[in-house]
Length: 257
Length: 352
Ligand code: FES
Image (cartoon, rainbow over all chains, first blue to last red; front, side):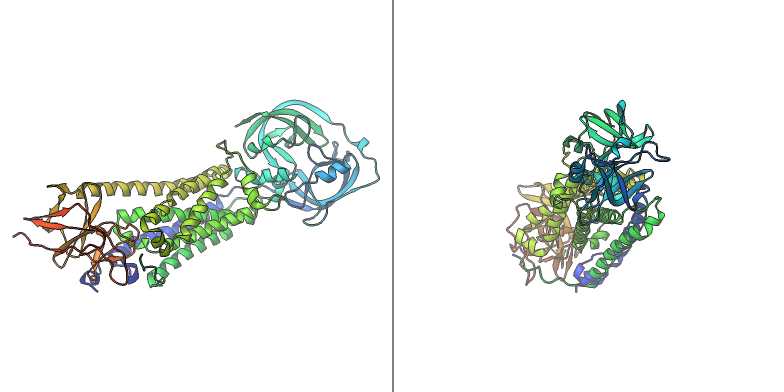
């Protein structure tokens, strides 16, 4: 080995092993910064993750009510003590990003028993019909219920600010189940049949959770996909169906806020 | 073609390097997933699957940021040069962590539907015409694609197969990958989370990477200016007084056409080579003479000063230049000779 190398100068050659004296300070400083950044970064970035909200599964139930398919499957129950408008619940499927449109369309207007797992976010609930595997559990029963439901109440034209979400993730299947990082997932859920909902920036007639519909009362046209997960304001007709508000939007009036 | 892609030798410095890397990544993931949630303010836990994709995603971002600081740091201060060795291990590990992030995302946001997950990834959000809500996944996919190409071609076999200039050009796309990663984070996670802490870390990391590159480029330009050779008669350029060449060391000179040559003094004689290492374009002039050979500061490839050839069994070659001494000054002929051309070293006569 040459003189130059032996005199421990600052020149490092990988295959010669040891770090030269003169480089040790710099390398140690780098390694310390590197490790500190990784330890500090993990804690800072991990702890800075926002609150996904109090949402998630809330046990299995069987509910009896009248099933509707439009704009998205939902179940309405007659008024009862403490619930003068009658419990009203959007229906999702327990089988991933799918919906129960087929069953709801077939049984539309009939009294049914629906079994599945509840998802709850604050006061708002949905039912994931059936279980992860197997058929959806929606069974028609002999009971006349439709005449006992509260009438649909038109609430006029509104412009409301909020975010288009899929009801399934927003109510706790994914935490967080909203926001721009979740946009593609939300689209995928609604494409698959999950009811699209509008989460208003503030309470509207006491509710922040509105079932979405197009102007004609059907499911949203594909144009909603550009707006999902953004804070927007949009105009439409609002109506009350039991405890659930339905917002029939005109997407051409949407503005990004 | 070179035969330098001999089996990787696991010397101590490599093992320490890899151990530090793996310890840092392991600590990051563990702390992010196990300790950080207890510091967070959640009414109910973020899904573990989402925490995991975030842990791997943010880790890959930090890793790539650190990788990109090594080059400019080494140019600003040669004491950082040892970090260049094994930088590829760092790169490959980053690619693995980024790929894990992608798999976790695919298996969560894009799973459980009737649409096949790769189709869903491309089809679920097609809002390419807008800034907010743009499919930021596309930036991530492109960045990961680049990282995979870089990881796969990181072995020396590919360098000699593709030739060093092509290889180097391909590997410069790491900058495109970093820009894409920053866009991926800026249009995705940062928009969703709106946390000043996360924004500060992302902007800080990208800012440091940018500043170091600007500083290194400025430093380089200044050195080029002070090393610029004076054009004299025809192609012979003045590269400085005899006393400016130190034994065992090289000096980079910038020729009138912008090319750089490295002039080395060994055993009282001067030789000149191209400054561009045949391995990965490392700056040979910043190397040293070790065992009679010019030794590149980046990965230690060697070349004989008199003919620019690597010692046997290696076959790499770099161009050489002719030198002459006139009085107290040394002149270099700016016309590069074919790689491997023998040039008799000039015996220096120190001016009395
Ligand atoms: S660039 Fe790798 S040894 Fe010179």
